[in-house]
Length: 145
Image 1 (cartoon, rainbow, N blue to C red):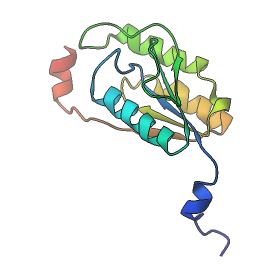
Image 2 (cartoon, helix red, strand yellow):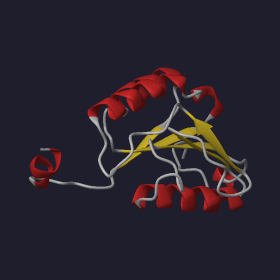
Image 3 (cartoon, rainbow, N blue to C red):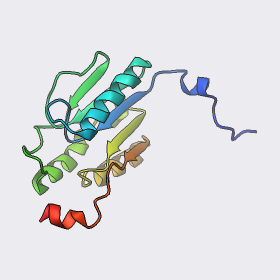
């Protein structure tokens, strides 16, 4: 049958070039998504894939084989993102060199970056995977003020 899924050995035939995109980078900022991205990059790199952590700021690579790609200066300091920092991160999506990647994975937050990133990935025909990490429901109103 022509539409059968490729075998796992076919999927691992060559290393993938992966970008994990988030506005904050570990250990410059310490949070759940930053930890997750650093750990995922470490594990994927150990399997032979070329992994790039792309975000705002500059840090040393957390592990050999993982590249850090700075998309601009660091996000705002403090526990909350500002609207301006979310817009700045969204604008930085135009600096992401999509031709270098087989797949781009991005977190859902701060959300504004997903529109330009999705558009660029579609035009470039690079798959985009968005990982949704949290749902705040009615708590968002009290958090955002």
